[in-house]
Length: 147
Image (cartoon, rainbow, N blue to C red; front, side, top):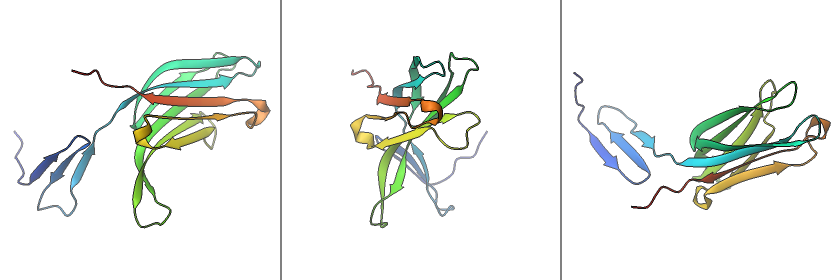
């Protein structure tokens, strides 16, 4: 059986704080939200392919899919609700980031950002990828049922 530590437990609608006098830093567990996402790409044969119904949480959640072309490509989206330095550098602001990676590539294929309050984030890249390929991704917050 574990030993209970003395300290303060603070629960809000966004986070759970665990403060203990014996540790210099409070532990924060942030609440996550689920998002419905899709990835759309132009395949090597020029046809468009959309992969929908991807559920990802906003605290670093990811989803990986395979394209239908040959050879197939492995694509991964990562959704992250985190802090970003403000323009002044004196504080941080909440940002929702979406990244699209392809296995074996050194850099992301694309990324987008928005405010968490907007409930969605996405991006589209035209013929800027090698071979004239296109890629886009979007995530929209899944609203919890009321009641």
